[in-house]
Image (tube, rainbow, N blue to C red):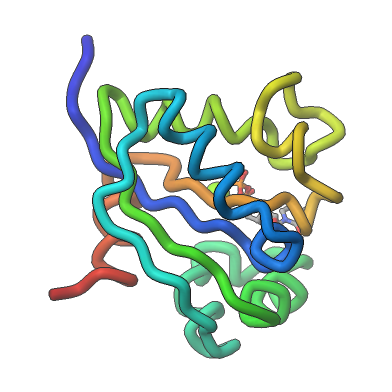
Length: 136
Ligand code: CDP
Ligand code: MG
């Protein structure tokens, strides 16, 4: 069943630094994901740790928090039919080496940690993550 949803997307520091923001936004728009709100920000390590706290027991947690706070990121609210799963499909697998061709991570990702984009993985997390960055 098709349903209009909103999801949170982040263009991570590796992609912002390589000036890939416009290319990635074009990929969203070509795939019927409309950018409803967006901002470029540079978060602290504490904010990154809060955002990624679901991963706090993972061995990569500390590096992940250092990385997400290492430079500017672009956070966006994407909207469209089945936006959460459509965005995950467009992003591709976490490890760019394993991602399908034409996905964002296959096209632009450097490694499993520098994989260019984040996307919410469920309705609950999309709501939480949108509130995290766009509380009004
Ligand atoms: O981002 P995604 O939902 O695909 O993956 P995740 O399992 O929720 O992991 C969050 C982020 O942690 C990934 O996007 C990677 O940047 C990072 N990660 C990592 O550095 N090393 C791993 N073995 C797994 C994930
Ligand atoms: Mg995830």
